[in-house]
Every structure is written in structure tokens, then in C-alpha cells.
Amino acid sequence: MNKSNYISKTHLTNTTNKIKRPSWIKVKAPQSIEVFKTRDIVKQFNLNTVCEEAACPNIGECWNKKHATFMILGRVCTRKCTFCNIATGTPNKIDKTEPEKIARAVNELSLKHVVITSVDRDDLDDGGAEQFALCITKIRSLNKNTTIEILTPDFQRKKSSIDIIVKSKPDVFNHNLETIPRLYKEIRRGANYNHSLYLLKTIKEKGNIWTKSGIMVGLGEKTSEIYSVMEDMRRVNVDFLTVGQYLQPSKGHQKLTKYYSPKEFKCIEEKAWQLGFKMVSCTPLTRSSYHADEYFNMLSKKNA
Image: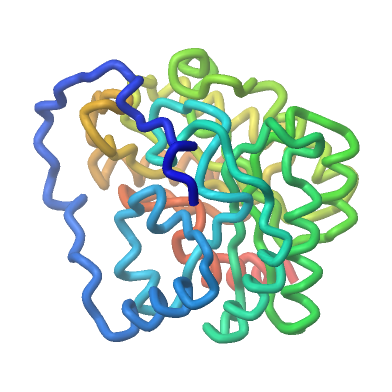
């Protein structure tokens, strides 16, 4: 990796966050033998994980179970979302051996369910869709019983990219709305709320695939705005909702405005069930791939 390709997050407005982190947010540092084994396998195949790059608070719990969310298409993103810990700048060329290496890592970890995500690659004609498809094909060739979940960028609403994803037939298609429409220009630069809804709608209509989306809270949204986003998701038949607490990675990232209590998360969860979501994960530490294998099994059995 050429370090010169990185642009750190110091380009963001530096803000001081004085909100004390509550006890329900604190997690133990990853130190078990299984955590180190998972890390070694990831390093063995020279792969990237969103667990590390995005500083996920659940890395200890997940890696202890040998669960890792692989991040393809490099470590450098072409966008500058102000909440995200991923480096931004000019990305490197695609690693053509990546799909094979991920398939072998999945085999080594004995994963029954795998989640693959990526950085945004607006420099590519297909936004990286073909690399997702190749990963799915390679994983299935070596791990016939492994179910596959992908968490993708928006592909700039390119029809050809959407068709590539539909044809590859992931078991779950995830694309996060991330936040409410009012905050998009400030927080999710380069993205479009309606485009993201269109992507989720089109994947569902063309592929009849389980769809999933999520948002963060604690960025300055109102409860009514959260519910409005959830209603929009249901209008495009999103099956699985995730809602988690935004954690400010550094002083240079988007300012945290509030920590939601477990009781407030429970209220959001109850609203989600009322709206008709088939599966809901709504807790302070919920992330897109948190307990993804367990939730997928529950979703499949519930709707068999």
C-alpha cells in the first residue's frame, strides 16, 4: 500500500466533543486466542476488514467467534463521508487475486455466513460491482454451504452495475442509508438519499433477494426523522433494519450530538416491528454485520 495515496480525516472540521460515553457503550479490548487466530488468517491472505479500518467496537466479540467482515477494493475510499474512519484519497489498482484469497480465508475460518463490503470506488466504471460478483463466485466454489451477504456502495445508480449484482445472487443485499435526508449534504457527501432508495428497490424487484439497510443515530436527527427513514425503507420493501449508535472516531470527524439510551433504542425497535420489518437489530452497539450470521438464520427460519 502506497501511503501517499491516503488523505487523513484531518480535512474535516475539528470539533471538541465533551459528551461523556455511557457505561452501556463501553466494550472490552480484543485479547482472546481466537481473536489473534482470526487476525492471523486475515494477515495471511493480505486482506482488509472493515472491522479494523472502521474501528468497529465489536471487533473483539466478532473475531472471538472467527467472524470478520471483509472489505474489498482496497483501503482508500473515493468519498469523504464525515462520520467514517476509512481513509480517503486516490485508491490503488484492483487486486485481481482478492476474490480467491477471500474464498480461501472463508474456508480457513470455516464461516457459514460471510459479509463482504467495500470502499466507494467512483473511479471505476462499474463502481466495483464486478469484484463483488467475482468474490461471490469464488466463495461458492470453495464453500458451497456458506451464505453470502454483501454491503455495497450505491454504484452511482448505474443500471449495468445493478444487473451485475442481481446476476451474482447474494443471499443478502445490504446498502445503508446511514442517516436522515436532511443531513446528507453535511455527512454523506457524494451520496443521494433517493438514489440509495432506488438501489434497494431495484435489487428487490429484479433479484427477489433479502434486502437490508441501516442508519446511525446521534448525529442530530429527530425521532420523527428516524421513523420517516424507516417508513421509506419499508416502501421499497427492505426486509432487515439495523440501527446503532454513532461513535465519533476522532475530534476531526462529524460531531456526536447525543448518546441514545437502551430504552430509546427499544422504542425505535418497537416502531420497526410495527412498520413490518422482517428482522430488526436496534441496540447501541449494532453495526451492519453485527451478529449477521445469527440474524440471517433467524430471518430464513422465520420466513421459510
